[in-house]
Image 1 (cartoon, helix red, strand yellow):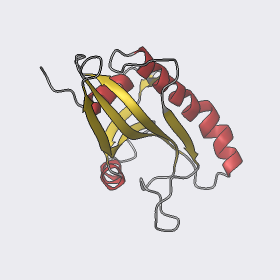
Image 2 (cartoon, one colour):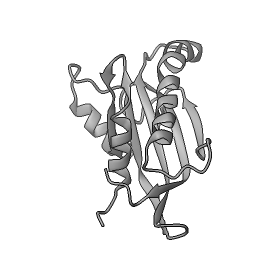
Image 3 (cartoon, helix red, strand yellow):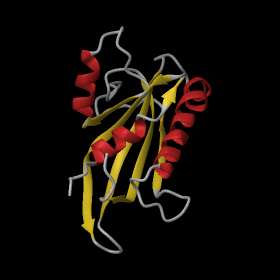
Length: 165
């Protein structure tokens, strides 16, 4: 049996999502690695919208009712914003028209994929709107760009190991 990796599964799921008829971007790593990768792209390189799997990922193997891997993982959906935007402007210009629809698209793509065993319509997760994704350093953004982010913490995601990417 071919080993299945959550990074490949999520990359495939995200590849079905578009923004303004253009591809979105997927990456994975910790915040430092993601910031370093993004800083290598110049202004001519498209960076956003970015879907990122934040490492580390928890994986549990189980054989109840078949062979599955159960994952707990965090993802972000990031979009560049303006430093001088207020929270209300971020909500109006970034979250409502861009990030929230991308979040809904991600949830629907996960549901419609054959990768995860979804027992009901609801996917076990929490969502946090992050107006300016800050870091431990005051006024420093974790991704070195001014971005607004939806952070999603997925829990108990049962991956069907019989599915291939």
